[in-house]
Amino acid sequence: MEIRKTQVVMPVLLAIMSLMVSQVALAEKYSGSMAPHDRQIAEMQALKASLVRRNLPPLVSPPPTPPQAVPGPRVYQVISYGADPTGKTDSTDAILKAMEDAFEGPNHGVLMQGINDLGGARIDLQGGSYLISRPLRFPSAGVGNLLISGGTLRASNDFPIDKYLIELKDESSKLQYIFEYITLRDLLIDCNYRGGAIAVVNSLRTSIDNCYITRFGDTNGILVQSGHETYIRNSFLGQHITAGGDRGERNFSGTAVNLMGNDNAVTDTVIFSAKIGVMIAGQANLLSGVHCYNKATGFGGTGIYLKLPGLTQNRIVNSYMDYTGIVAEDPVQLQISGTFFLGDAYILLKSVTGAVHGVNIVDNMFSGSGHGVEIVQLDQTKSGFHDIGQVVVDRNNVNGMKVKSTVGKGSVSGTGTSWTVDLSPVLLFPNLVKHVQYTLVASEAGVFPVHALRNVTENKVVVETNAPVTANVYVTVDQGV
Ligand SMILES: *[C@@H]1O[C@H](CO)[C@@H](O)[C@H](O)[C@H]1NC(C)=O
Ligand SMILES: *[C@@H]1O[C@H](CO)[C@@H](O)[C@H](O)[C@H]1NC(C)=O
Image (tube, rainbow, N blue to C red):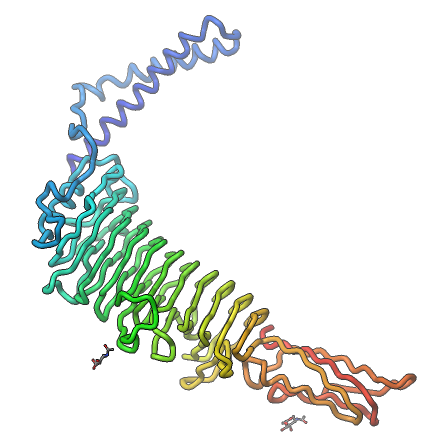
């Protein structure tokens, strides 16, 4: 590590020097055609540069040796390390060696503290399919700006079931973040039902791009733990290779993506089989363009499970929940919008201690089979929801399912002294009216009845008059304020 530091210092000094020299050269070149003011400035700069330069030589002599003078591209071709692209023999050692060489490769300064910048080095799988018997890991933490791409990794029959084929992980590191800007791209990872595909632990700015992840065991396809900004995009994950309607769907297990950290994104990603599509236990994650058809809710599956009771702070937008729904425990700050729910897929708000706050479930589309499945449901078996505020479930369009909303509108007409508008079929929370407005329109000319709001118990709004009249009563109720 010490050697690396001095290697960095030299090129930086050289760069500063050459910048200064070129400034002097510029001043000389242009002084002939310059306005007097500009020339003065140029001369001052030249003087300054020469003064600074005069102070420099003791620092830069003897002349520096170039940093690790390895010419040519930093592409580590795994076949040249002995990896077998036919997938017949074990390639673990060969690929680990390529990773080790990349790890030791010339560095270009540091990214976050303690993370050497490998300058965009590439570990190239060269379009092969490789048999892997234990996790592919770097020798230790502390590198960044590197790409692994372009091939297939398959777990062997003895791959440990509690490990991942690629692990950005180092239990012994004391660094704040252990890897930064590692890109995993264009990879098919077949876990052979023996473990997970990728674990990203305490890393920064990781990309998983255009990956196909399959046959993970009863574990996670991708695990993201601590760190932040792991971006999973344009990828496909499924425990079993199927295109829906699979006879074994009831048996799907595992979780395709497990986000146990903050500030990650899953975008334009399809999850085609797993018991749980995306499990989230960290705040400030964004899911967008996620298509879940992993395991139907009817078979016990969940598309997206938000397990952050009390502080959720996640957004699910423009996604597609296909026969599988969303579960949120005590959601506090949650956005679900622009999403298409097909096949009776619904949202379940599950009470743990009874809080639901700052939840927007708006502008979604729901389509079902006409069996009266409610689009948003409450699970209050553990505890009732009692701490309710700023919940907006509204403006969802619904076909073949039952609308639920935190806003209700209705009217009744008739002759008498009492009018009841029952909004309980549409309102999400039983027996909760935070705000109500009504209008009574008497049909007969010249009649001005005295009227009053009497009762809102059980979401039934009761208006009464002092004397019998023929009237229409219009009511608007809001539960979410
Ligand atoms: C599902 O799992 C059960 C129990 O392991 C097994 O008996 C059954 O054959 C499996 N079904 C399918 C379709 O794979
Ligand atoms: C409101 O209605 C409920 C149920 O219909 C009833 O039990 C309660 O006594 C009513 N409250 C008033 C003030 O009339």
